[in-house]
Image (cartoon, rainbow, N blue to C red):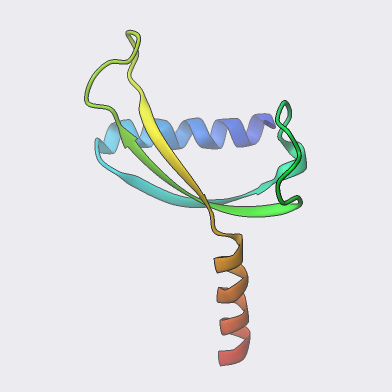
Length: 87
């Protein structure tokens, strides 16, 4: 991942530890900037919802979070269409 995005995500991990509860947020990602994975999914800019929760126990001696990532690109497209329809 690009350095800026990695820092953004690590800041969210730190925030989750500070909150000590479920932390949900949305972000967009240019999929071609992610290195080391198969490029067999949808390409281009994709939107994701992250649901991050701090583990209540140490994992291999470290604090950790568990994260669920959901591709919400279609939801974002529909939201934009609704905004255009209302305006």
